[in-house]
Image (tube, rainbow, N blue to C red; front, side, top):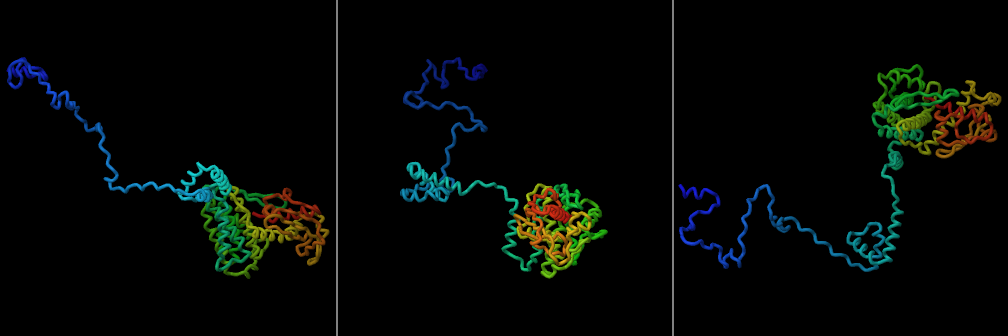
Length: 450
């Protein structure tokens, strides 16, 4: 038991000088000889290492595997640089400035520019010239792009059944308004819009919404639809078939304020009108369309509907902050011509209502004879000149009896006829009889209606 106790302590030496082999005597030197691996002349034995924990990274990184051993494709060797003559490099400067050289040619040219001052100056001049050829442009799309594309398509590829010339303005203006309506959001259909027109010598207005404006166009276009035998969009009949009464009847019978759902019926009716007049042919332009208080032949009624569509499209565009351009010059000219032809009747109506200048009654002439005339000169888009008889709708205009001359911009005249510009504020060049000029300007404003 005593010997057992002598070895219980870890690392203790035994009391007996005997070694473990059982030998006795003095203590032997157990250091390895010089010629052994552990001796002075050999490598030292490795130090005992601490146990390796699996979570620790290896102290010596593993050798990397070669790409040849992975089976992956080897990278392409770098291309050898091009060695080109000076005359070839000089000829490539233009293509280099336009970024039209291959990568190898680009590298060769740029290396050459670092050593050749003359070519470097020429390259700088060419690069500046390229910058002038490509000025910076906005990345925003042109808001009139859709309209120009549609006009180009219609001009290059006419339909198999052509639309009569007097109906093309209505076709174009409804298409432009439909494109505007497609671009606005749901909330913008309830944006407030103020309709403006003239009654007598005073400006009147009515507040509605974008959807209410489309409902107004739907009901007034319905006058033409009824003439062509199409369905009337107005369910409850109005007291009188005037545009104002029809509009009020539609608004009052609606259970809820009009929403964007009104766009579908208006769009379908516009397509049906254009398709019907196209199949009916040009002879249908003489059909009378009743507006309640007056009549217009179908060809003029379609121009009237095109004019009002453009005017109210401008009202909507202003309400939703949308850019909107005037009609094409040919269509604008046709609208101005309609307004100029309606001025003699408007002058006569103002005289009957006692709104014309008192001096006018002293110059009435028999029908078919020349009478006093006013020259209406329209400048800009859709421009032209018209002689307006002042004394009677049946009087003949005559340059020999010209008493006044008015000059107006085309869009300005249309805004005046739409009731959007007061006659006193119309930017007109005026020469001649001041009373005649005033009567014509107010007669133009009286052409407007809700």
